[in-house]
Image 1 (cartoon, rainbow, N blue to C red):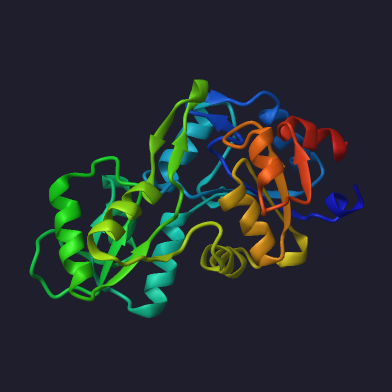
Image 2 (image 1 turned 90 degrees about the vertical axis):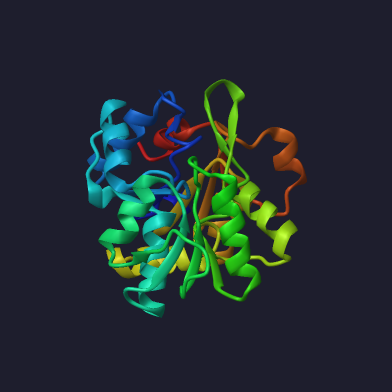
Length: 264
């Protein structure tokens, strides 16, 4: 386990890794406590762009985990950083929740909600307030050549008891069926979200580990970006998926509780 002992910062997925829905995964609190005792940093990294930092901090605190705004980084924040570098104050047609809208407005973007306007980007987030009208307008802009960005590619968002919600990836599939176009995707497993984290927190890839329950996002993030990858079997991935995947993790644990035991 020498490789794990060299890790200075853990990038921790939340849904399926730290909690499922509104239930804390067994051992998660003790794992985080052990990291603090060892002076090892951790950042909660989520592709779920339906909530802003404050909502995640509130949720983690309600689950008994001490967390602050700087401990949380989402695909939504990574998207605002990416777009700000392309054009500050850009006009955006956003498919997103009120939380994501607030995050974009705080970052200085102008949100456009009507069709037939002069806009710079269409951005698709995990929009739990999605309507047919929003999809229709987005498809019109995209078909007409407006640059199209998605916060993350996840098809489903895991919930407790094996349930799930359709996520942004499913919405991407709708838009592709209509327009034939695919977005630039910012969140895991793409480099844009890792580049944003490294820049913001002044980190080195060699000292980072990506911990998560999904092969095609979390584990692929580690593989594609040169990070140590750790799969936990507490969320989406089952044994059959692990046996058949091309995204092979460096380490596999049943949950973060077992990771704690390796860093005692």
